[in-house]
Length: 164
Length: 420
Image (cartoon, rainbow over all chains, first blue to last red; front, side, top):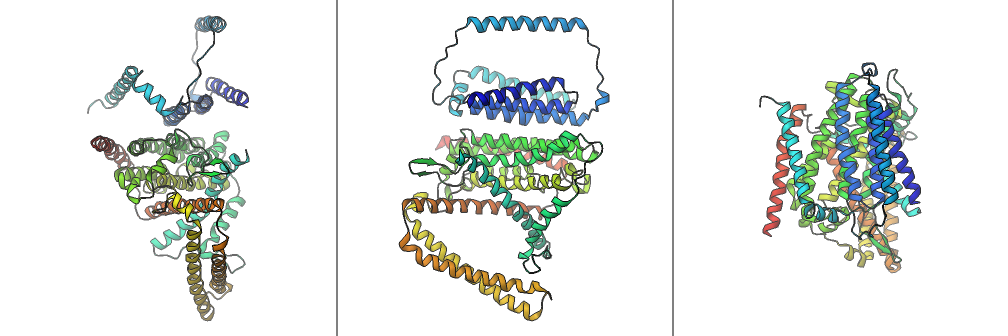
């Protein structure tokens, strides 16, 4: 049962992620990105990380993608306005090579590593456990990221409202 | 497996059964607020009108029979997808709402909740933040300026008010100490003074106002805004696709009422009657309830019969509609005798432990649905009382007044909790 669900949601995630790249229409791309986030959230939920799953939907699908679609709608691009830019072939080759190198590296990693994980505790993935980790072990990165967000907010306001 | 399916199905059935009642309440309530009579013409067999409730039935038939128009230059896929998204997302939230106290049935725990998630309240926030997709996709795919404006307005509005909503909930969570909705309801207990609307009045007000904006109801129904953008995001829709948007609005209202009553008004808690008390005294409670219901039926029946006879004598409508009050009155009298009979017999038969469990659950579900219906009425009441906000006023209220107040509220709650 669980493996069937895994393949369903994994397949959904991969297929919609490909859709993001291959769709011509920007709204279609955005909508398939939303579905992709849903697939990832479902995978999180199956790994007992309910908090992460809900946050994935709340932040990415619910907030960020709504803003994306908002901007796309605001610009209201028509299909014929999106003409393709010429793309040098050499970049394609370079990208392909880098990706291939990554693929080999991953293959090496998967073969060499020993996959033994400690059993997870009962409270794994619950809000209490995540919160405790966030405010003890990972406090500094947590604070840094909040400062980063604050900087981004202020920068946004400064850029948008030059004369305040 | 069957149990899980039932748990998924029952909330949907509840929503779909409340929607026609709400539409009736909206029309009749607005009529009385505006000093009119409201709908009273549609009837079954020329007799039964039920004060205009038959109009909801006629409405369903009308919407099903209308031609389903597909405008020429729409994006077909998203145009069809949007109403389904709106309705599905609206119904999904009910999964985490607890309807009654959990009980132990033959050694198995049974909770009246489709899923008691560890992150229950976050789930509500997550799903309600998805509600905007249906409206946005509808506005964009219809290929019309007005629908696009409606979609843009709704997304901006919902993003702004989600922040206030989440911040208002935080202070409630600080009091309850848990994100599980069942715990939040449990924590409020039977004492009215422990309900969150007493302990957190500011949060309650902020959350309710934010919920009005989230459900796109007046005074915040700018996505529709008939006077400015014709009908907003669902302008190009007809037939059942329009009906889905229409139903989604009411479904959102029901969900909002359920969340408000769970978070702030004790959920399934019946004032002054705890679950244990009800389980111990199920027989007495049921008997009192039946007697009260019988008296109510008797009074209603006598009144209706009297009025029916007057109508027939005076030839009020001049058709078979004159007999309606008499027929309903006789029905109510019959119901009164039936209830009285049951209540006379019920005493010695009751009560095994299981029967008292069921009675308690039924009473609590009834109490919860009563609260939900009351808040639905508040939504309707406000809609027909307040005028629409202007768009800049809406944004100002959300960002400049409600957000700072909710943040101050969080700090005040924290300070009070520290002192205690």
